[in-house]
Image (cartoon, rainbow, N blue to C red):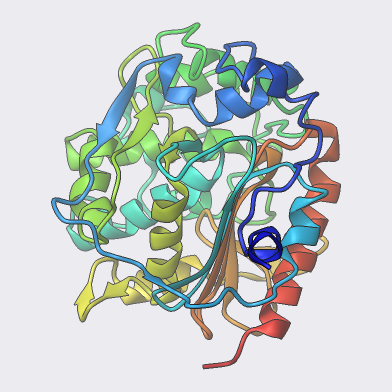
Length: 389
C-alpha cells in the first residue's frame, strides 16, 4: 500500500520527454553551446554562469507562499509527459496548487526568462512614469538616449515602442540563428559590439508610419531598456530590486545579463526561480497590489494588459492574440494576458480569477509554435477545472 501511495503521489518525477537527447547521461551539462540539444537544459537554467550579469537582490524576508493541502487534478502529468518543461507551477490567489520540475531541476535554479523580461521591463517603465523619471509616453526615445538622435528608433515615441508599433523593419522570425534577431543577440548577449545604442544601429529602415501596425520586434524592447536605464539613473537590476523584486517578497536573487557596455539587455535575459516568476505573475493578477500596498500603479497594469488601439486587438495584432505594453493579451473580453519567451517560457495570468500558470522549458525552436498551442490547451483546461472563487 505504501508503495502504491508513493507511485501515485502528486509531483512525482516521472520520465520526461527526450531525456537522453537532452543530456541525461551527462547530468544535463551547463555547457555554452546554447543551440545544441544536449546543452539546452543546463544552459537555460544556468545562463548567468556564461556571461556577466547584474544581481537583482531578493527581499530581506521572503513572502511565503501558501500550499494546497491536496493537488487538484489539472492534467499536469499528461502535459509533462510530452512537453520539455524544466518547471511548471500553478497558483490561484496566493496558494500554490502544483509545482513540478523535470530534468533534475530544483526550486533554487534560476531559469532564463527569454522575452518574458519584456513584460518586467514594461512594469518598470510604468513605475518610472509614476516616479516622474519619464515625463510622457509621447516622448521620443532620443530624449533619453541621445545616441539615437536622427535614428528611426530615436524618433519613435515610447508609446509606440511599448506596443511594438514603431514601423521600423526588424526580422524577428529568423530566431537565434539568422536574420535581425541573430544580429541583436550578437551585439548584446554575445557581447560582440560595444553595447548600448550601437546594438540597434543597423535597424534603420522605417517601413511604415509609427502607430499603424503591430510588428513584434525585440529591438524595440532593447531601446526601451536603454531609455529606462538613462531615465532612472541606475542599473535596471537595482531598479527592479527596489521597485518590484523586494516589495513582492522574492525569495531568491535574480540576475539580468548585461551587454559589453554594462547595460542590462532589455528584450530578454532575466534569470529567476520558478516561484519568483509566479510571485510576479500574481502581482500582475492583482493589478500591482500586494497586502494593501500598490507596488505597480493599478492604472498602468490595466493599460499594459489591454489592447489600446485597433491594430493591437486580439485577432488583429496576431491571428489569435492581442498586445498591450510589452505584454500579450490572450482573450478578447476577459482580463487574461501573458508574458511569453522563446523555447516555451511563459506566465499565463487570469486577473479576474487570480490564476497564474508559469512554464519554464527547453523546446526545440522548430516546435515552438506547436508547443505553445499545447500550453494554451493546458491553460484552458486549468481554467475549466479550477473554481471561480
